[in-house]
Amino acid sequence: MELSGYMIKVWWDGQTLTAQGTTKPARVALLGSEHGDGDLVLPRERIAQARHKPAGVMTNGRITLRTSEGRKHILHFRRKAQAEFAELARALGASV
View 1: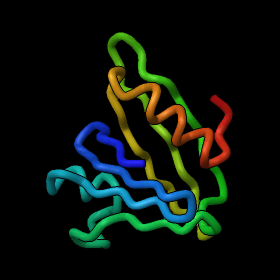
View 2: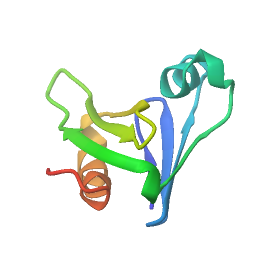
View 3: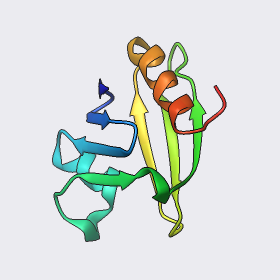
View 4: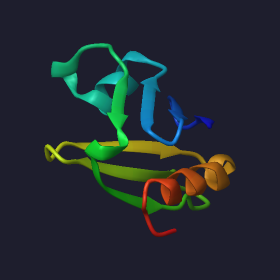
């Protein structure tokens, strides 16, 4: 599955989640400044927790991921992508 979020592109193949910031600020927000310009690549076994917050009329939604190492990554999405990101959240084990 391929998704377009708020300044990110996300791919999920059932085993690995890959997220790419589409701008430099989005990459820093996704990975942190110490991790450079690469993509976020998380194998399923490293995702310890996923939480879903739906988008509202005036706010973006988000999926918050916690890794087994304790890192936090947030995938933001707009309301028009709500259904696709809800499907991703369910696949990652979040209650929707």
